[in-house]
Length: 585
Ligand code: GLY
Image (tube, rainbow, N blue to C red; front, side, top):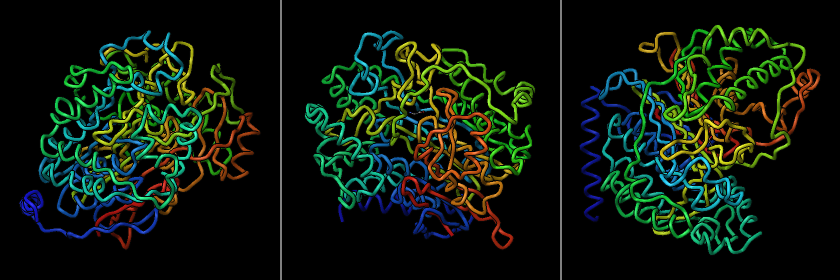
Protein backbone atom coordinates (compact mmCIF):
# COMPACT_ATOMS: atom_id res chain seq x y z
CA UNK A 1 0.00 0.00 0.00
CA UNK A 2 1.58 3.31 -1.02
CA UNK A 3 1.53 6.59 0.91
CA UNK A 4 -1.27 8.21 -1.11
CA UNK A 5 -3.54 5.15 -0.66
CA UNK A 6 -2.96 5.23 3.12
CA UNK A 7 -3.72 8.99 3.11
CA UNK A 8 -6.94 8.42 1.19
CA UNK A 9 -8.07 5.68 3.58
CA UNK A 10 -7.38 7.96 6.58
CA UNK A 11 -9.28 10.81 4.91
CA UNK A 12 -12.20 8.50 4.23
CA UNK A 13 -12.29 7.36 7.86
CA UNK A 14 -12.22 10.96 9.12
CA UNK A 15 -14.87 12.12 6.68
CA UNK A 16 -17.22 9.22 7.48
CA UNK A 17 -16.87 9.99 11.20
CA UNK A 18 -17.38 13.71 10.63
CA UNK A 19 -20.43 13.34 8.42
CA UNK A 20 -21.98 10.77 10.74
CA UNK A 21 -21.57 13.15 13.68
CA UNK A 22 -22.88 16.08 11.65
CA UNK A 23 -25.95 14.25 10.44
CA UNK A 24 -26.57 12.87 13.92
CA UNK A 25 -27.10 9.34 12.73
CA UNK A 26 -25.34 6.54 10.96
CA UNK A 27 -26.81 5.79 7.53
CA UNK A 28 -26.80 2.91 5.14
CA UNK A 29 -23.35 2.81 3.63
CA UNK A 30 -23.99 0.66 0.62
CA UNK A 31 -24.94 1.97 -2.75
CA UNK A 32 -26.51 0.29 -5.75
CA UNK A 33 -25.95 0.82 -9.47
CA UNK A 34 -29.14 0.09 -11.41
CA UNK A 35 -28.93 -2.67 -13.99
CA UNK A 36 -31.00 -0.67 -16.50
CA UNK A 37 -31.92 2.93 -17.41
CA UNK A 38 -34.45 3.31 -14.60
CA UNK A 39 -34.67 2.32 -10.94
CA UNK A 40 -36.27 3.38 -7.67
CA UNK A 41 -34.20 4.08 -4.56
CA UNK A 42 -35.45 4.47 -0.99
CA UNK A 43 -32.92 7.07 0.24
CA UNK A 44 -31.05 8.96 -2.44
CA UNK A 45 -30.32 8.85 -6.17
CA UNK A 46 -27.93 10.00 -8.89
CA UNK A 47 -28.77 9.98 -12.59
CA UNK A 48 -26.07 10.68 -15.18
CA UNK A 49 -25.46 9.56 -18.74
CA UNK A 50 -22.77 7.02 -17.81
CA UNK A 51 -22.98 4.17 -15.21
CA UNK A 52 -19.44 4.82 -13.91
CA UNK A 53 -20.31 8.46 -13.22
CA UNK A 54 -23.62 7.64 -11.50
CA UNK A 55 -21.75 5.09 -9.40
CA UNK A 56 -19.11 7.69 -8.46
CA UNK A 57 -21.84 10.02 -7.21
CA UNK A 58 -23.61 7.28 -5.26
CA UNK A 59 -20.30 6.33 -3.62
CA UNK A 60 -20.13 9.85 -2.17
CA UNK A 61 -23.71 9.56 -0.88
CA UNK A 62 -22.85 6.23 0.73
CA UNK A 63 -19.92 7.91 2.51
CA UNK A 64 -22.37 10.38 4.06
CA UNK A 65 -21.74 13.11 1.50
CA UNK A 66 -24.48 15.38 0.21
CA UNK A 67 -25.73 15.99 -3.31
CA UNK A 68 -22.95 18.51 -4.00
CA UNK A 69 -20.27 15.91 -3.22
CA UNK A 70 -22.12 13.43 -5.44
CA UNK A 71 -22.53 15.87 -8.34
CA UNK A 72 -18.89 16.97 -8.22
CA UNK A 73 -17.62 13.36 -8.12
CA UNK A 74 -19.94 12.44 -10.99
CA UNK A 75 -18.86 15.47 -13.02
CA UNK A 76 -15.11 14.83 -12.72
CA UNK A 77 -15.81 11.21 -13.66
CA UNK A 78 -17.83 12.25 -16.72
CA UNK A 79 -14.80 14.27 -17.80
CA UNK A 80 -13.05 10.89 -18.17
CA UNK A 81 -15.81 8.63 -19.48
CA UNK A 82 -17.68 11.09 -21.75
CA UNK A 83 -14.73 13.07 -23.12
CA UNK A 84 -16.77 14.15 -26.16
CA UNK A 85 -19.56 15.69 -24.09
CA UNK A 86 -18.10 17.61 -21.20
CA UNK A 87 -15.05 17.80 -18.97
CA UNK A 88 -12.35 19.93 -17.47
CA UNK A 89 -11.88 21.74 -20.80
CA UNK A 90 -15.46 23.07 -20.72
CA UNK A 91 -17.99 24.86 -18.55
CA UNK A 92 -21.41 24.51 -16.98
CA UNK A 93 -24.21 25.55 -14.67
CA UNK A 94 -24.96 24.04 -11.25
CA UNK A 95 -28.25 24.60 -9.40
CA UNK A 96 -28.08 23.64 -5.72
CA UNK A 97 -31.07 23.37 -3.38
CA UNK A 98 -30.29 22.07 0.11
CA UNK A 99 -33.33 22.70 2.33
CA UNK A 100 -31.84 21.26 5.48
CA UNK A 101 -28.23 20.28 4.95
CA UNK A 102 -26.43 19.00 8.08
CA UNK A 103 -23.38 21.17 7.31
CA UNK A 104 -24.88 24.20 5.59
CA UNK A 105 -28.51 24.52 6.65
CA UNK A 106 -30.70 26.12 3.96
CA UNK A 107 -28.98 26.79 0.63
CA UNK A 108 -30.65 27.66 -2.68
CA UNK A 109 -28.16 28.99 -5.18
CA UNK A 110 -26.73 28.80 -8.68
CA UNK A 111 -23.09 28.56 -9.75
CA UNK A 112 -22.34 29.82 -13.26
CA UNK A 113 -19.07 28.42 -14.55
CA UNK A 114 -19.72 28.99 -18.23
CA UNK A 115 -16.65 29.66 -20.40
CA UNK A 116 -15.60 33.31 -20.91
CA UNK A 117 -14.37 35.14 -23.99
CA UNK A 118 -10.56 35.57 -24.14
CA UNK A 119 -9.34 39.16 -23.78
CA UNK A 120 -8.18 39.36 -27.40
CA UNK A 121 -11.60 38.47 -28.88
CA UNK A 122 -14.09 41.23 -29.69
CA UNK A 123 -17.44 41.46 -31.53
CA UNK A 124 -15.86 41.47 -35.02
CA UNK A 125 -13.24 38.81 -34.34
CA UNK A 126 -14.85 36.07 -36.45
CA UNK A 127 -16.14 38.24 -39.31
CA UNK A 128 -12.99 37.85 -41.43
CA UNK A 129 -11.99 34.34 -40.28
CA UNK A 130 -12.84 31.05 -42.03
CA UNK A 131 -16.36 29.71 -41.38
CA UNK A 132 -15.16 27.03 -38.98
CA UNK A 133 -13.11 29.41 -36.78
CA UNK A 134 -15.80 29.36 -34.08
CA UNK A 135 -16.16 25.58 -34.08
CA UNK A 136 -12.74 24.04 -34.82
CA UNK A 137 -9.36 24.66 -33.21
CA UNK A 138 -7.93 27.27 -30.88
CA UNK A 139 -10.00 30.24 -32.06
CA UNK A 140 -13.17 28.38 -31.00
CA UNK A 141 -12.08 27.91 -27.39
CA UNK A 142 -13.56 29.87 -24.48
CA UNK A 143 -11.72 30.13 -21.15
CA UNK A 144 -12.80 26.91 -19.34
CA UNK A 145 -14.82 27.21 -16.12
CA UNK A 146 -15.56 23.62 -15.05
CA UNK A 147 -12.72 23.17 -12.57
CA UNK A 148 -13.40 26.56 -10.92
CA UNK A 149 -17.12 25.79 -10.71
CA UNK A 150 -16.79 22.29 -9.30
CA UNK A 151 -14.22 23.28 -6.69
CA UNK A 152 -16.26 26.34 -5.69
CA UNK A 153 -19.30 24.09 -5.20
CA UNK A 154 -17.30 21.57 -3.21
CA UNK A 155 -15.54 24.14 -0.99
CA UNK A 156 -18.72 26.09 -0.30
CA UNK A 157 -21.38 23.37 0.02
CA UNK A 158 -19.74 19.93 0.03
CA UNK A 159 -19.09 17.73 3.06
CA UNK A 160 -16.29 15.44 1.89
CA UNK A 161 -12.59 16.21 1.27
CA UNK A 162 -11.44 16.99 -2.26
CA UNK A 163 -9.24 13.90 -2.40
CA UNK A 164 -12.20 11.65 -1.63
CA UNK A 165 -14.46 13.31 -4.19
CA UNK A 166 -11.90 13.16 -7.01
CA UNK A 167 -10.83 9.58 -6.27
CA UNK A 168 -13.43 7.84 -8.51
CA UNK A 169 -12.51 10.01 -11.51
CA UNK A 170 -8.80 9.31 -11.08
CA UNK A 171 -9.61 5.61 -10.77
CA UNK A 172 -11.67 5.69 -13.98
CA UNK A 173 -8.88 7.46 -15.85
CA UNK A 174 -6.20 5.05 -14.61
CA UNK A 175 -8.18 1.82 -15.00
CA UNK A 176 -9.98 2.91 -18.14
CA UNK A 177 -13.56 2.51 -19.31
CA UNK A 178 -15.19 0.42 -21.99
CA UNK A 179 -16.52 2.12 -25.12
CA UNK A 180 -20.33 1.86 -25.33
CA UNK A 181 -22.75 2.31 -28.24
CA UNK A 182 -23.17 6.03 -27.69
CA UNK A 183 -19.43 6.66 -27.57
CA UNK A 184 -18.90 4.56 -30.70
CA UNK A 185 -21.65 6.49 -32.53
CA UNK A 186 -20.09 9.82 -31.58
CA UNK A 187 -16.64 8.56 -32.57
CA UNK A 188 -17.85 7.34 -35.99
CA UNK A 189 -19.13 10.83 -36.81
CA UNK A 190 -15.76 12.32 -35.89
CA UNK A 191 -13.70 9.65 -37.67
CA UNK A 192 -15.49 10.48 -40.92
CA UNK A 193 -14.64 14.17 -40.39
CA UNK A 194 -10.95 13.30 -39.81
CA UNK A 195 -10.85 11.07 -42.88
CA UNK A 196 -12.28 13.89 -45.02
CA UNK A 197 -9.11 15.89 -44.34
CA UNK A 198 -6.23 13.73 -43.04
CA UNK A 199 -4.23 16.83 -42.00
CA UNK A 200 -6.60 16.97 -39.03
CA UNK A 201 -4.95 13.78 -37.69
CA UNK A 202 -1.67 15.60 -37.14
CA UNK A 203 -3.38 18.82 -36.01
CA UNK A 204 -5.33 17.00 -33.23
CA UNK A 205 -3.14 13.90 -32.64
CA UNK A 206 -4.20 12.96 -29.09
CA UNK A 207 -7.88 13.07 -29.98
CA UNK A 208 -7.24 11.02 -33.12
CA UNK A 209 -5.00 8.41 -31.48
CA UNK A 210 -6.50 8.02 -28.03
CA UNK A 211 -10.17 8.94 -28.19
CA UNK A 212 -10.74 7.67 -31.76
CA UNK A 213 -8.23 4.80 -31.73
CA UNK A 214 -6.67 6.15 -34.96
CA UNK A 215 -9.99 5.51 -36.68
CA UNK A 216 -10.66 2.03 -35.31
CA UNK A 217 -12.35 2.65 -31.94
CA UNK A 218 -15.36 0.41 -31.42
CA UNK A 219 -17.80 -0.91 -28.82
CA UNK A 220 -15.96 -2.98 -26.22
CA UNK A 221 -12.58 -1.25 -26.58
CA UNK A 222 -11.03 0.07 -23.36
CA UNK A 223 -9.74 3.64 -23.16
CA UNK A 224 -7.16 4.34 -20.46
CA UNK A 225 -6.18 7.96 -19.83
CA UNK A 226 -3.20 8.28 -17.44
CA UNK A 227 -2.67 11.82 -18.73
CA UNK A 228 -6.05 12.98 -17.45
CA UNK A 229 -5.45 11.01 -14.24
CA UNK A 230 -2.37 13.20 -13.77
CA UNK A 231 -4.40 16.37 -14.28
CA UNK A 232 -7.05 15.19 -11.81
CA UNK A 233 -4.38 14.28 -9.26
CA UNK A 234 -2.88 17.77 -9.57
CA UNK A 235 -6.34 19.29 -9.05
CA UNK A 236 -6.93 16.98 -6.10
CA UNK A 237 -3.61 17.97 -4.50
CA UNK A 238 -3.36 21.67 -5.37
CA UNK A 239 -6.93 22.73 -6.06
CA UNK A 240 -7.87 25.49 -8.47
CA UNK A 241 -4.29 26.77 -8.83
CA UNK A 242 -3.24 23.57 -10.61
CA UNK A 243 -5.60 24.38 -13.44
CA UNK A 244 -5.64 28.16 -13.70
CA UNK A 245 -2.07 29.13 -12.82
CA UNK A 246 -0.21 25.84 -12.59
CA UNK A 247 0.97 23.21 -15.05
CA UNK A 248 -2.42 22.48 -16.61
CA UNK A 249 -3.00 26.16 -17.34
CA UNK A 250 0.48 26.48 -18.84
CA UNK A 251 -0.22 23.50 -21.08
CA UNK A 252 -3.55 25.01 -22.21
CA UNK A 253 -1.93 28.35 -23.09
CA UNK A 254 0.89 26.64 -25.02
CA UNK A 255 -1.54 24.38 -26.90
CA UNK A 256 -3.90 27.22 -27.80
CA UNK A 257 -0.95 29.34 -28.99
CA UNK A 258 0.39 26.46 -31.10
CA UNK A 259 -2.92 26.36 -32.98
CA UNK A 260 -3.21 30.12 -33.52
CA UNK A 261 -5.52 31.05 -30.61
CA UNK A 262 -5.24 33.78 -28.03
CA UNK A 263 -6.06 32.45 -24.54
CA UNK A 264 -3.25 33.63 -22.25
CA UNK A 265 -2.24 33.42 -18.59
CA UNK A 266 -4.28 36.47 -17.48
CA UNK A 267 -7.40 35.00 -19.16
CA UNK A 268 -7.03 31.84 -17.10
CA UNK A 269 -5.93 33.48 -13.85
CA UNK A 270 -8.79 35.98 -14.14
CA UNK A 271 -11.50 33.33 -14.46
CA UNK A 272 -14.22 33.66 -11.80
CA UNK A 273 -17.43 31.76 -11.16
CA UNK A 274 -20.63 33.78 -10.79
CA UNK A 275 -23.20 32.93 -8.16
CA UNK A 276 -26.75 34.09 -7.53
CA UNK A 277 -30.23 32.96 -6.56
CA UNK A 278 -32.21 30.73 -8.92
CA UNK A 279 -35.18 32.03 -10.88
CA UNK A 280 -38.38 30.91 -9.17
CA UNK A 281 -41.58 30.17 -11.08
CA UNK A 282 -44.57 27.95 -10.64
CA UNK A 283 -46.08 24.88 -12.24
CA UNK A 284 -49.56 24.41 -10.80
CA UNK A 285 -49.10 24.30 -7.04
CA UNK A 286 -45.39 23.49 -7.36
CA UNK A 287 -42.38 25.83 -7.32
CA UNK A 288 -39.83 25.58 -10.11
CA UNK A 289 -36.20 26.61 -9.54
CA UNK A 290 -34.41 27.44 -12.77
CA UNK A 291 -31.17 29.00 -14.05
CA UNK A 292 -31.01 32.68 -15.01
CA UNK A 293 -29.24 34.06 -18.12
CA UNK A 294 -26.85 33.39 -19.76
CA UNK A 295 -28.92 30.21 -19.54
CA UNK A 296 -31.86 30.78 -21.86
CA UNK A 297 -33.41 27.53 -20.64
CA UNK A 298 -34.57 28.76 -17.25
CA UNK A 299 -36.65 31.62 -18.65
CA UNK A 300 -37.96 29.43 -21.49
CA UNK A 301 -39.04 26.61 -19.17
CA UNK A 302 -40.81 28.96 -16.77
CA UNK A 303 -42.52 30.73 -19.70
CA UNK A 304 -43.77 27.49 -21.28
CA UNK A 305 -44.96 26.06 -17.97
CA UNK A 306 -46.91 29.25 -17.16
CA UNK A 307 -48.47 29.34 -20.64
CA UNK A 308 -49.51 25.68 -20.50
CA UNK A 309 -51.05 26.17 -17.05
CA UNK A 310 -53.03 29.10 -18.44
CA UNK A 311 -54.25 27.03 -21.38
CA UNK A 312 -55.53 24.21 -19.15
CA UNK A 313 -52.91 21.79 -20.47
CA UNK A 314 -53.15 18.79 -20.68
CA UNK A 315 -56.52 18.90 -22.45
CA UNK A 316 -56.85 15.14 -22.95
CA UNK A 317 -56.35 15.49 -26.74
CA UNK A 318 -52.71 14.52 -27.53
CA UNK A 319 -52.71 16.35 -30.90
CA UNK A 320 -54.01 19.58 -29.35
CA UNK A 321 -51.62 19.23 -26.41
CA UNK A 322 -48.66 18.91 -28.78
CA UNK A 323 -49.86 21.98 -30.74
CA UNK A 324 -50.25 24.11 -27.58
CA UNK A 325 -46.80 23.00 -26.39
CA UNK A 326 -45.26 23.93 -29.76
CA UNK A 327 -46.97 27.35 -29.82
CA UNK A 328 -45.73 28.13 -26.29
CA UNK A 329 -42.21 26.98 -27.31
CA UNK A 330 -42.23 29.21 -30.40
CA UNK A 331 -42.94 32.24 -28.20
CA UNK A 332 -40.19 31.24 -25.76
CA UNK A 333 -37.58 30.60 -28.47
CA UNK A 334 -38.47 33.87 -30.24
CA UNK A 335 -37.73 35.66 -26.95
CA UNK A 336 -34.50 33.68 -26.71
CA UNK A 337 -33.41 34.91 -30.13
CA UNK A 338 -34.33 38.55 -29.47
CA UNK A 339 -33.42 39.20 -25.87
CA UNK A 340 -31.08 36.62 -24.39
CA UNK A 341 -27.39 37.10 -23.69
CA UNK A 342 -24.96 37.45 -20.80
CA UNK A 343 -26.69 39.93 -18.45
CA UNK A 344 -23.31 41.21 -17.24
CA UNK A 345 -22.82 42.72 -20.71
CA UNK A 346 -26.29 43.33 -22.16
CA UNK A 347 -29.53 44.06 -20.33
CA UNK A 348 -31.78 40.99 -20.39
CA UNK A 349 -35.39 41.83 -19.43
CA UNK A 350 -35.94 38.74 -17.27
CA UNK A 351 -38.68 40.41 -15.18
CA UNK A 352 -40.81 41.46 -18.16
CA UNK A 353 -40.19 38.11 -19.89
CA UNK A 354 -41.56 36.28 -16.85
CA UNK A 355 -44.34 38.75 -16.10
CA UNK A 356 -47.41 36.57 -15.37
CA UNK A 357 -49.86 39.03 -16.96
CA UNK A 358 -47.81 39.21 -20.19
CA UNK A 359 -47.48 35.42 -20.32
CA UNK A 360 -51.20 34.89 -19.71
CA UNK A 361 -52.17 37.42 -22.38
CA UNK A 362 -49.78 35.79 -24.81
CA UNK A 363 -51.07 32.30 -23.99
CA UNK A 364 -54.65 33.50 -24.51
CA UNK A 365 -53.70 34.64 -28.02
CA UNK A 366 -52.58 31.14 -29.04
CA UNK A 367 -55.01 29.70 -31.57
CA UNK A 368 -56.18 26.16 -30.82
CA UNK A 369 -56.97 25.26 -34.41
CA UNK A 370 -53.93 26.55 -36.30
CA UNK A 371 -50.39 27.77 -36.01
CA UNK A 372 -49.47 31.30 -37.05
CA UNK A 373 -46.84 32.51 -39.50
CA UNK A 374 -43.52 33.56 -38.03
CA UNK A 375 -40.65 35.53 -39.47
CA UNK A 376 -38.05 32.89 -40.23
CA UNK A 377 -34.44 33.29 -41.17
CA UNK A 378 -32.23 30.24 -41.15
CA UNK A 379 -35.13 28.00 -42.20
CA UNK A 380 -33.84 24.72 -43.64
CA UNK A 381 -30.62 24.87 -41.66
CA UNK A 382 -29.36 21.36 -40.99
CA UNK A 383 -29.06 20.77 -37.25
CA UNK A 384 -25.91 18.88 -36.20
CA UNK A 385 -26.00 15.65 -34.25
CA UNK A 386 -25.00 17.02 -30.88
CA UNK A 387 -23.00 14.65 -28.73
CA UNK A 388 -21.74 17.38 -26.48
CA UNK A 389 -23.12 18.27 -23.07
CA UNK A 390 -23.97 16.10 -20.11
CA UNK A 391 -26.38 16.45 -17.20
CA UNK A 392 -26.27 15.20 -13.60
CA UNK A 393 -29.35 15.00 -11.33
CA UNK A 394 -28.90 14.16 -7.63
CA UNK A 395 -31.13 13.90 -4.55
CA UNK A 396 -29.42 13.15 -1.24
CA UNK A 397 -30.51 11.55 2.04
CA UNK A 398 -30.93 15.00 3.64
CA UNK A 399 -33.57 16.07 1.09
CA UNK A 400 -31.08 18.22 -0.83
CA UNK A 401 -30.75 18.27 -4.61
CA UNK A 402 -28.35 19.32 -7.35
CA UNK A 403 -29.07 19.77 -11.05
CA UNK A 404 -25.89 20.32 -13.02
CA UNK A 405 -25.40 20.62 -16.78
CA UNK A 406 -21.95 20.85 -18.33
CA UNK A 407 -20.58 20.95 -21.83
CA UNK A 408 -17.67 21.35 -24.21
CA UNK A 409 -20.35 22.19 -26.87
CA UNK A 410 -20.09 19.99 -30.01
CA UNK A 411 -18.60 16.46 -30.14
CA UNK A 412 -15.09 16.67 -28.64
CA UNK A 413 -15.53 20.48 -28.48
CA UNK A 414 -13.00 22.38 -30.61
CA UNK A 415 -11.09 19.10 -31.22
CA UNK A 416 -8.08 20.94 -29.72
CA UNK A 417 -6.51 18.40 -27.40
CA UNK A 418 -4.15 19.01 -24.49
CA UNK A 419 -2.05 15.83 -24.85
CA UNK A 420 -0.07 16.12 -21.58
CA UNK A 421 -3.34 16.10 -19.62
CA UNK A 422 -5.65 13.98 -21.80
CA UNK A 423 -8.63 16.25 -22.55
CA UNK A 424 -10.18 18.35 -25.31
CA UNK A 425 -10.97 22.05 -25.06
CA UNK A 426 -14.46 23.38 -25.71
CA UNK A 427 -15.77 25.24 -28.77
CA UNK A 428 -18.21 27.28 -26.74
CA UNK A 429 -17.40 30.46 -28.71
CA UNK A 430 -19.85 29.16 -31.34
CA UNK A 431 -22.69 29.77 -28.87
CA UNK A 432 -22.13 33.49 -29.48
CA UNK A 433 -23.43 35.34 -32.52
CA UNK A 434 -20.05 35.08 -34.24
CA UNK A 435 -21.10 36.53 -37.63
CA UNK A 436 -23.96 38.99 -37.88
CA UNK A 437 -26.92 37.66 -39.86
CA UNK A 438 -26.00 33.99 -39.50
CA UNK A 439 -27.19 31.22 -37.21
CA UNK A 440 -24.95 29.02 -35.08
CA UNK A 441 -24.23 25.27 -35.35
CA UNK A 442 -27.63 24.53 -33.78
CA UNK A 443 -29.45 26.68 -36.33
CA UNK A 444 -30.21 29.24 -33.61
CA UNK A 445 -30.61 32.85 -34.60
CA UNK A 446 -29.44 35.30 -31.97
CA UNK A 447 -29.36 39.05 -31.44
CA UNK A 448 -26.32 41.30 -31.35
CA UNK A 449 -26.63 41.28 -27.56
CA UNK A 450 -24.90 37.91 -27.85
CA UNK A 451 -21.82 39.10 -29.76
CA UNK A 452 -18.51 38.10 -28.13
CA UNK A 453 -16.69 40.63 -25.90
CA UNK A 454 -13.72 40.08 -23.58
CA UNK A 455 -14.90 38.32 -20.42
CA UNK A 456 -18.44 37.74 -21.74
CA UNK A 457 -20.16 34.33 -21.47
CA UNK A 458 -22.02 32.89 -24.47
CA UNK A 459 -25.76 32.33 -24.35
CA UNK A 460 -26.66 28.75 -23.46
CA UNK A 461 -29.62 26.40 -23.60
CA UNK A 462 -28.44 24.41 -20.58
CA UNK A 463 -31.40 24.18 -18.20
CA UNK A 464 -30.71 22.53 -14.84
CA UNK A 465 -34.08 22.56 -13.05
CA UNK A 466 -35.42 21.55 -9.63
CA UNK A 467 -39.16 21.32 -8.86
CA UNK A 468 -40.42 21.63 -5.29
CA UNK A 469 -43.66 20.17 -3.99
CA UNK A 470 -45.27 23.40 -2.82
CA UNK A 471 -45.28 27.17 -3.06
CA UNK A 472 -42.96 27.90 -0.11
CA UNK A 473 -39.40 27.44 -1.37
CA UNK A 474 -37.98 27.26 2.16
CA UNK A 475 -40.22 24.45 3.37
CA UNK A 476 -41.33 22.50 0.27
CA UNK A 477 -39.58 19.20 -0.34
CA UNK A 478 -37.87 18.30 -3.59
CA UNK A 479 -40.29 16.78 -6.12
CA UNK A 480 -38.11 16.46 -9.23
CA UNK A 481 -34.62 17.18 -10.55
CA UNK A 482 -34.00 17.36 -14.29
CA UNK A 483 -31.83 18.62 -17.10
CA UNK A 484 -30.53 17.45 -20.43
CA UNK A 485 -27.94 17.57 -23.17
CA UNK A 486 -28.71 18.37 -26.81
CA UNK A 487 -28.18 22.05 -27.65
CA UNK A 488 -31.53 23.88 -27.87
CA UNK A 489 -33.28 20.53 -27.53
CA UNK A 490 -32.12 20.61 -23.90
CA UNK A 491 -35.02 22.97 -23.18
CA UNK A 492 -37.59 20.73 -24.91
CA UNK A 493 -36.23 17.52 -23.37
CA UNK A 494 -36.17 18.93 -19.85
CA UNK A 495 -39.64 20.43 -20.18
CA UNK A 496 -41.28 17.33 -21.64
CA UNK A 497 -39.68 14.98 -19.10
CA UNK A 498 -40.91 17.22 -16.26
CA UNK A 499 -44.39 17.69 -17.74
CA UNK A 500 -44.60 13.92 -18.21
CA UNK A 501 -44.17 13.29 -14.49
CA UNK A 502 -47.76 14.42 -13.95
CA UNK A 503 -49.09 11.16 -15.38
CA UNK A 504 -46.10 8.82 -15.90
CA UNK A 505 -45.77 6.13 -13.21
CA UNK A 506 -42.02 6.61 -12.87
CA UNK A 507 -39.06 8.62 -14.14
CA UNK A 508 -38.11 6.17 -16.91
CA UNK A 509 -41.63 6.19 -18.38
CA UNK A 510 -41.53 9.97 -18.63
CA UNK A 511 -38.00 10.14 -20.04
CA UNK A 512 -38.66 7.38 -22.58
CA UNK A 513 -41.64 9.10 -24.22
CA UNK A 514 -40.94 10.30 -27.77
CA UNK A 515 -40.34 14.04 -27.89
CA UNK A 516 -40.99 17.03 -30.14
CA UNK A 517 -39.06 20.30 -30.52
CA UNK A 518 -39.70 23.72 -32.04
CA UNK A 519 -37.12 26.48 -31.70
CA UNK A 520 -39.08 29.20 -33.59
CA UNK A 521 -36.47 29.37 -36.32
CA UNK A 522 -36.47 27.29 -38.49
CA UNK A 523 -40.31 27.15 -38.48
CA UNK A 524 -40.43 23.37 -38.22
CA UNK A 525 -41.55 20.91 -35.55
CA UNK A 526 -38.84 18.29 -35.09
CA UNK A 527 -40.35 14.94 -34.10
CA UNK A 528 -38.61 11.80 -32.96
CA UNK A 529 -39.42 8.79 -35.21
CA UNK A 530 -41.52 7.16 -32.46
CA UNK A 531 -43.92 10.13 -32.11
CA UNK A 532 -47.38 8.54 -32.68
CA UNK A 533 -49.73 9.34 -35.57
CA UNK A 534 -52.36 11.10 -33.44
CA UNK A 535 -49.75 13.69 -32.39
CA UNK A 536 -48.34 14.08 -35.93
CA UNK A 537 -51.87 14.46 -37.34
CA UNK A 538 -52.83 16.92 -34.60
CA UNK A 539 -49.86 19.07 -35.61
CA UNK A 540 -50.08 18.83 -39.40
CA UNK A 541 -53.81 19.57 -39.47
CA UNK A 542 -53.02 22.79 -37.60
CA UNK A 543 -50.50 23.86 -40.24
CA UNK A 544 -47.20 22.75 -38.70
CA UNK A 545 -44.44 21.37 -40.91
CA UNK A 546 -42.89 18.25 -39.35
CA UNK A 547 -39.35 16.96 -39.75
CA UNK A 548 -38.02 13.75 -38.18
CA UNK A 549 -34.84 13.70 -36.14
CA UNK A 550 -33.47 11.34 -33.53
CA UNK A 551 -32.50 12.21 -29.97
CA UNK A 552 -34.41 15.35 -29.02
CA UNK A 553 -32.39 15.85 -25.86
CA UNK A 554 -30.90 13.30 -23.47
CA UNK A 555 -32.54 13.77 -20.06
CA UNK A 556 -31.47 12.73 -16.57
CA UNK A 557 -34.54 12.80 -14.29
CA UNK A 558 -35.22 12.01 -10.64
CA UNK A 559 -38.79 12.25 -9.35
CA UNK A 560 -40.25 11.54 -5.93
CA UNK A 561 -42.78 8.72 -5.92
CA UNK A 562 -44.76 7.05 -3.17
CA UNK A 563 -44.04 3.38 -2.49
CA UNK A 564 -46.08 1.80 0.31
CA UNK A 565 -46.87 5.23 1.73
CA UNK A 566 -43.21 6.30 1.85
CA UNK A 567 -41.31 8.68 -0.40
CA UNK A 568 -38.81 7.04 -2.72
CA UNK A 569 -36.78 8.44 -5.63
CA UNK A 570 -37.45 7.14 -9.11
CA UNK A 571 -34.40 7.86 -11.25
CA UNK A 572 -33.85 7.58 -14.99
CA UNK A 573 -30.79 7.95 -17.16
CA UNK A 574 -32.13 8.57 -20.63
CA UNK A 575 -31.94 5.31 -22.68
CA UNK A 576 -31.00 7.55 -25.65
CA UNK A 577 -27.43 7.74 -24.31
CA UNK A 578 -27.02 4.52 -22.35
CA UNK A 579 -26.54 5.78 -18.81
CA UNK A 580 -27.76 4.06 -15.65
CA UNK A 581 -28.73 5.67 -12.34
CA UNK A 582 -27.38 4.68 -8.93
CA UNK A 583 -28.50 5.37 -5.40
CA UNK A 584 -28.99 4.33 -1.80
CA UNK A 585 -31.73 2.10 -0.34
N1 GLY B 1 -23.29 24.47 -25.88
C1 GLY B 1 -24.67 24.28 -25.83
C2 GLY B 1 -25.36 25.19 -24.90
O1 GLY B 1 -24.76 25.63 -23.93
O2 GLY B 1 -26.51 25.52 -25.12
